[in-house]
Image 1 (cartoon, chains in turn green, purple):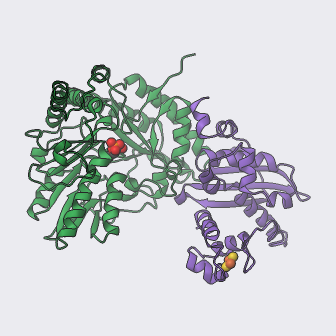
Image 2 (image 1 turned 90 degrees about the horizontal axis):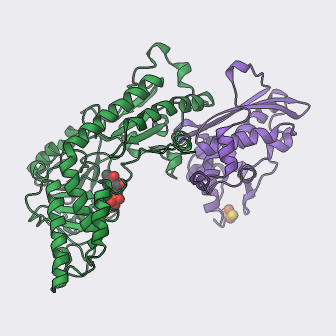
Amino acid sequence: MSRTFVYMDYNATTPLRPEVKERMVEALDVYANASSLHESGRRARAEIEEARASVADLIGAKDTSGLYFTSGGSESNNTVFMTMYQLGRKNPSRRKIITSSIEHPCVMNAAAYLAEEGFPVVYLPVDSSGRVDMEALKKELGPDTLLVSVMAANNEIGTIEDIEAISALAKKAGALVHSDATQAVGKVPVSVEDWGIDYLTLSCHKIYGPKGIGALYVRPGAPIQPLIRGGHQENGVRAGTYNNLGIIGFGKAAQLALSDLPEFGARMAALRKRLMDGLVSRIPLVKVNGHPEAVLPNTLNLSFPGAEGEAILLSLDLEGIQVSTGSACASGSLEPSHVLLATGLGPELAHGSIRFSLGRNSSEKDVDYVIEKLPPIIQRLRRMSTVNPLQSQDQSQTNAPLDRLPGEKVPATTA
Amino acid sequence: MNAFQWLYSDVVKEHFVNPRNVFDPDEKFEADAEGVVGNIKCGDQMMFLLKIKDEIIQDVRWKTYGCASAIASTSMLSESVKGMDIRKAYGIKPQDIAAKLGGLPENKIHCSVLGDKALRAAIDQYLEKQGRTGEFKGEDAVVICTCLNITDKDIEEAVKAGAHDWQKLQEATKIGTVCGGCKSKAEELLHEYVHIYS
Ligand SMILES: Cc1ncc(COP(=O)(O)O)c(C=O)c1O
Ligand code: FES
């Protein structure tokens, strides 16, 4: 019996594209140390520089000189924050860090570390769609602001931030600007030049390349300090013998991501719409999380009041469907997703949230399978639940997408 | 080995997929007692309904909002208390349920096994209706603070009465004010009970 298997967790990570895999199999033989001066070293180096150019193209960088390979998004983000630590220690009059309240844990925790070290750190509020409150940003910016770091697109709800506008405001205050574009790259156009930012983070395993490789873009002239000290690789910004295999795979993945982008984005958006319409019309009381338009074309985050996320996730898993949840029960902590809470969602809706993230191998058949399997799961869990939202709601409007449930906290800010 | 087994035992999976004794509103189950514990905010809430005759649990129904192990553990508990003396049922601990389920991850024992507390709340309500309020309290209590002879039940009661942080718990019970050796264990319990009752 063949089992239906539907992977809808592409924001967590992606499979290798066959073309990337093929390129990497060849690259397994590129063994030389790319820092060596001899011929095999130079050949390895040439392949690495070719990959660097592809990655620079993908993020709209004018040239490759500010592009450094790292082990991934977490390292790139930490490199920026630790650079700020050095700068702020030398110049305490400018060391305020402004970030958002919906960043990935690797930014959240790097910022928290600076706060522990005595740096003023501000987590900007977001509106109910997950967009950063620009008025709050304006109020916080000042001559003491060292860095503004806001993600280009959120991994959980897919909301896309207006980095260009954020950057323009930050620049006026003389601050440095960083954006974690790990989720945006390969899904929507990204341009460090258009955005006018100083630092950009990206990671290869989100664009159908290998894991453990990523990059940090640093605008030429912007300050940068190594997180890992050692040899002279990467102009001394990132020590360690070149990861030939990862870098060459990254180059291929970046090249393909860029050429596929328009077609890929349109196809994802159509699948996302099919999934959303199918689920919202078949399941009463569904809340669609994230921004209605400024959202990654592959990411759909829904809350199902009355049903808990881990129970939904594992029920789907039994049907061969792989998704993720913002519920605390799945994270090992007692707190549900900080992203959903920051958008003003009540804890119950956050616990009952499911993220569907589509990707290259997703098909209409996959989407229709989820649309078939999920409604009875939600119905079953709600029937055995102590909270049955259907009993307390006006039945006439149950198939309309939920805006806000009764008793839900309204976010403190409007933007 | 299939991947689902890796997360929970087969018994958990079986009870999650086919939970026993779930309350069905159409069934008109007439309960003698009802207990609710947990908090939606924390991701788990549970309700137990009991039919009791001659100190024996005749039948039981439950509802839960929670994760797979919350559903499975309540289902398992509901099976095992049928026909049980209420005094014995009152002493069931999360670890007993976890053992019957073939084990649960440690963090799940603390946060998802609320069935025993909901069951106790229902039995407490039953005793109250009979004018026997608090008759089983203090049984099966475990001494946490040996200096001051303070038990887990005392901590539980203090939290129920509003002691939601360490300072308030100390004010209410004086726990940990002698040698201090009980502090980490007591804080763990505090955390657990706050999760359940606040
Ligand atoms: C927004 C965002 N930033 C950073 C990361 C971390 O990237 P990496 O896994 O390459 O360290 C992720 C991946 O989970 C992410 O989604
Ligand atoms: S054991 Fe509690 S103060 Fe000593």
